[in-house]
Image 1 (cartoon, rainbow, N blue to C red):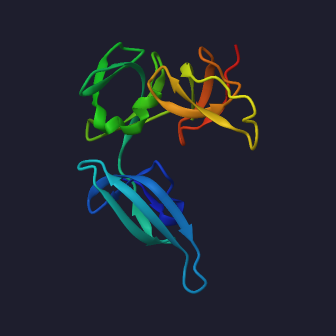
Image 2 (cartoon, one colour):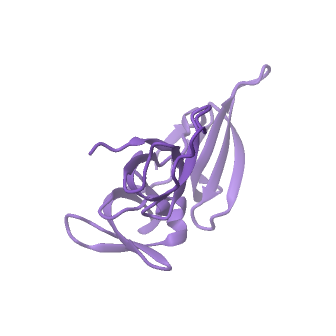
Length: 189
C-alpha cells in the first residue's frame, strides 16, 4: 500500500481510516495563525456509507486505499443496479445504485466512466469532468426578465434538473459540469 502526506489529500481520493477504505468528500487546508497547518477531511466509508470527519496535521503520513480503476461503458440502470460493460471484453458488471450515488443523474448511453474497485468489489464511479445532456423540457423565456444573467429551470434526458440561461431551448444539448451539476455552455452541433 502506498501513502501520502495529509497535506496532499484531495477530494475524490481513497484513504484508509480506522482500517477501512474511505472516499474523501471534502478536504480543506487550513493555516491557523498559531501552530502548524492542518487538513480537515470529510470522508465517506466505502463499506457502510457513513460520514466521518478527521483533522490531520499536513505533514502526517496517511495510508492510501489500494483501489483499482477500470474504464467501463454505461449500459443501463434498473431499480437496484447500474450496469456497465467492458468495451474490450464485453463483460458486464453490476454496481449497486447506492454506490453510484449522485453520478446516476449524469449517466447517458455509451458514456465511458471509471469504476473504482476495492478487494474485487465495486465501490464507486468516477465521471468525466463534463457530459453532454439533451434538454427535454424547458420553459419559455419571460420578456423583461433580463437583469443579472437570469436563468430558468430545465430538465435533461436523464431526469436531472438544472438552471440554464434563458436562451437555451427544448431539444438543445448542453454541457454540464459533473463536479457541481451546473450548466457550462451549449454543445456544438
